[in-house]
Image (cartoon, rainbow, N blue to C red):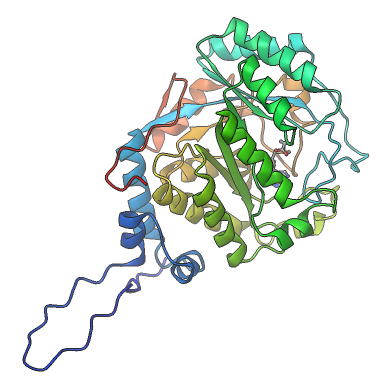
Length: 379
Ligand code: SAM
């Protein structure tokens, strides 16, 4: 990390004859972001394209996280419902065209067993995630959500099951789901079209997010970092879209290649950059959205063995260990070498607690709702 002089935001005006001017203290980019929760596109570009500000950025983002959430880290138990998917996203290992994948679906009983195990271990949020599997139609999803809700009144039910009609989202909500995760993936329409087949559009993705918000879900969105063809301008578009949406949860993680996708060749070389850029973006997100629930994702833990701990140190405050039945974990392979044992696994809670404590944070048994924004900068 280079210790160069931070860029200044405002240049003091030239002196006027006869008047002694005390130059206003020029604010660094990080300080401006900390104080105003915003930066211009030019400033964001500067901040994202160098490691020059990282030290100050990470110090500020950790401070802001502590102001809102202390050292608490919330747990979400991830249940990978199905790896069938009707979509064919170019980056994703469970895409429809991957014929090498051994497909599975969890039964209602299997899902409830996962919840039971999770509840005993102190999990108070269950996240049902899966491909867009037509088998899990509106009725079946409602059945699963209702069954979980009936047994676990004190838990949050999060769905991450892709795009559905507004009516279906409403029915899932009425059945007891309270949160929905749907990453927008990239807020640049041209970039979106390079990551997805023509049948999928950014417009539709955004429409779903607005519907979810309107219904009353705590909404999570986010994007992959370092996906093929991504530029700094794409990342800035992502931040601007999030500023409009104001989601409760923001999930970002590095893109990782999967051998059986059209993007298989994008593996390896860029991983170091993707890690540092993801950490920088987590810090920026924490400063822009101090109240947000930001996970240290599995992808971050996959790209680097200490990736999740590093994510926590720069502003993340959620981890999502895997509660799925052990025999399906390997099959829900979105990218190569996905981690699913040790501290990634929900049942190793003690190991996870230890690793999180080592970097100065505390796993809590809590439903982990978003905090309301009461600071003087709240908009
Ligand atoms: N089908 C649901 C949806 O579309 O939101 C949820 C499942 S989807 C597989 C979950 C997330 O995995 C996606 O939003 C995407 O960001 C992430 N993902 C998929 N492939 C990935 C890859 N190769 N590298 C990193 N993240 C990936």
